[in-house]
Image 1 (cartoon, rainbow, N blue to C red):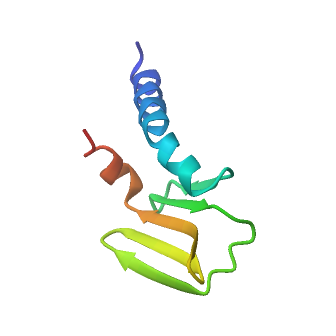
Image 2 (image 1 turned 30 degrees about the vertical axis):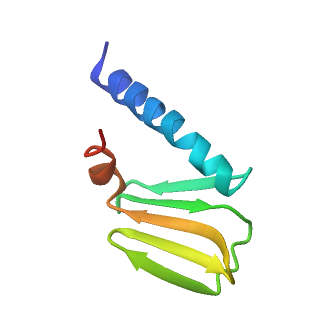
Length: 84
């Protein structure tokens, strides 16, 4: 198996592991990844219209009132590679 293909397979497996948790938050998830900055943006509502954000480690949680409307993960690939 080629290196790129192995990495894609590993990434797919990790996404599948996280999927039940994502669906529990929202039935729709929009994701954008900025490879240069290594930042993953996830939105659970479009537009997010976040009224507040809080940062824990390398993750920023975006809320509209009590509702979680998005997550920003900085250093996504670095953090992803340390799972398991």
